[in-house]
Amino acid sequence: MMVGNLLIGCAGWSIPFSQRDQLPGEDSHLERYARHFNAVEIVSSFHRPHRKSTYARWAASVEDSFRFSVKIPQEISHEARLRGTGHLLEEFLSECTRLGDRLGCLLLELPPTLHYDPAIVGSFFEQLRRMVDVPVACEPRHVSWFNDDVDQQLASFRVSLVASNPDALHSGRGKSHGGWTEIAYIRLPGTPRVYSLQHDPFHLTQLADQLRHLSQSRKTTWCIFDNTTLGTAIENAMELTQLCRPTPL
Image (cartoon, rainbow, N blue to C red; front, side):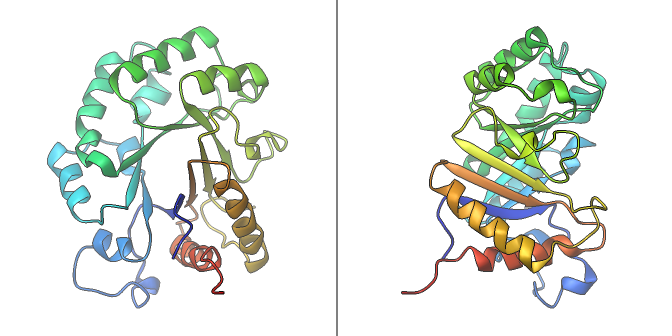
């Protein structure tokens, strides 16, 4: 069995043709995926809304212990840039909260040009926290977000900084799991070619050690593979899941 507070999965549950023998079945891709993993990141919500009934159907397709992370729409993060988003948040949350207890996290990815502004950040997260109490992971792309003052403000709103790879911009800071320390959220798009390359066995072994360490101090630790372009995310996630299983006594 897996470490209880460790969630491993992929960005989306589409099963590439090359992986279909490893995730067999005649039912939906989500149901087949969820028999092997305990978490998934819904990326499509970043690009378009989904019906409330769709979220409810997804929730009904998985076990009680399965968790969804849902990406906040780009209309909020990239177009409105966190300003004046009350009605957009209400609409989005009215949809994704139909996942019920299986909604484990909200993911906020920010554009590279969005500088940290404490007033804007405070207003946005105050508004979000009045609406929902779900853990939030924030993935900023501008260097101004990586300092102790930001950590303190995000922690006050129960928002964790995403640890991502590659990490050239952040000079190692993106791997420090800043902000709220109750959860850790790791996203792995592949390196050096993002969204494409497979993670090698040595890196996965190191990652498994890191996740076991994090799981001792965090309420929940997420690890999401986003190297989906060539269909390697599922294979990597399966390998890591196996590495993280406790060794029999």
